[in-house]
Length: 273
Image (cartoon, rainbow, N blue to C red; front, side):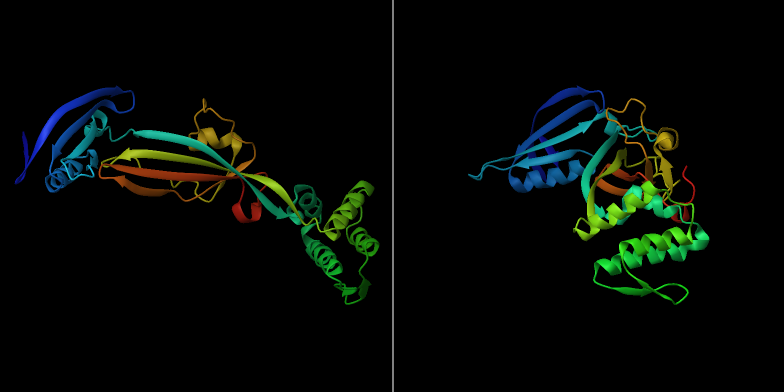
């Protein structure tokens, strides 16, 4: 018999196992009336045990299981209990205007001719919406047709586009006119989840938060394991703000995500790491 406060519960033989992560795993078992078991469970949880209670439907004695490990009992404050990397993927529908081939063509327009890029997009959208005429920056009118819009582009930024580029832009406008205004892209999120003991020296990594990191720098800058069992997609990763949550009386979870993209904006995020 083992006593917990003013209640009495019966201590059953314990089970022992070994884990490379948790060290010696001890499962302690107890039986007693529900109220007494509930009091014992509170005390064992305070000692760092993971607990579960099973109560028979016929109202018999309840059984309490309390699991603890040598690692959790004496954790190294400088080492995580677990360190898990995962790659999440889904598909997104994005505007055809963001298609890399289209974006790269428009990025060729010099910064001092930004109004040309704005006119091109607003005129294409307006023409497809039924607008027949528009104003140029010099306040003259233009009849909105595909040849006129492309001709204006060629006049304002000469020697910027080849014939094949104009054919591509013409096909792009045609696809928009046919209703194909979105395309599917894969989106990846690289996630790291670190479980640490309650009294730990490990803190969330705030360095490089909201910065863009190239895939080639992820290992050196963010500690992606060299022997990770999946391929980290090439491109760029935006490091998001980490979070820290208590998941048990003796453990915390540090979560961190990196959002993947094939391209990024130097204006918004600066130069990549």
